[in-house]
Length: 267
Image 1 (cartoon, rainbow, N blue to C red):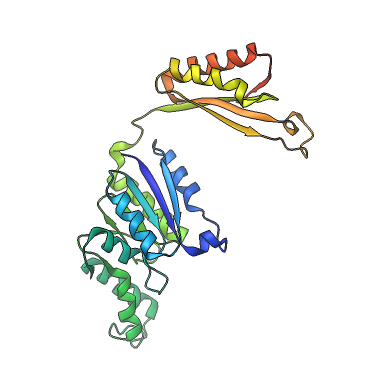
Image 2 (cartoon, rainbow, N blue to C red):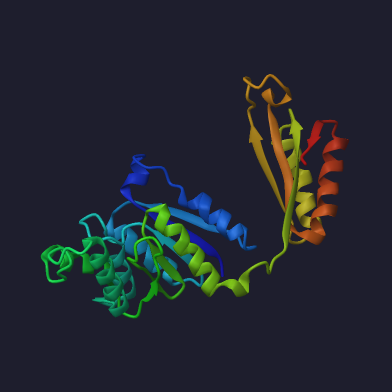
């Protein structure tokens, strides 16, 4: 079982809005000792959304999906989930009650605005039409719920709503997975070293320590800094089970030192 994130919306792909969900998902999961394994971005295209969900629903992954669950013409997620599952949409009874409560609250005592039979209020109930069999995700911001099917969880695109909903899902459904894998990472900077020269050592470290992954993040340098980091350098390190990180790190560090490259260890 892995953890994935799907962010839906043309506004993300066009650059009209910047995605903030992935960084927050990483933070929320990291605080609970789990990690985000993958992420995908999709525009408001029903065929592509449906195909993506059909593929991910066939896996055992836990998937958080943000965006497209409203009731405007560019919201397609609810319909695509139903199509991917081969089930109809239906107004969820609990969702209807929550939406009705929201309508009354926002009417602020105006009986006309609070009339649930008004066309605009009837349209608002469409936000509670979920694939048959879906479960409710409570929305602490405005009551309008998200929904879950299997291990897929669908939330609005607004961070103020989506992030508390993501936390709620994690804490209520996956707490048994928290902090199961105790992983660490350690890294250092190496200057003016070609990655091709370091690669055999990196491969040797991984083959020596089963479960250790070596990472190499090269940089061309930032001349504006005026220090050693203005030069070409690599953020080089290891990550994996905590009991293996120290010896794997030592092997990598000593190997690079033996090659004669300048090194700065990270705190």
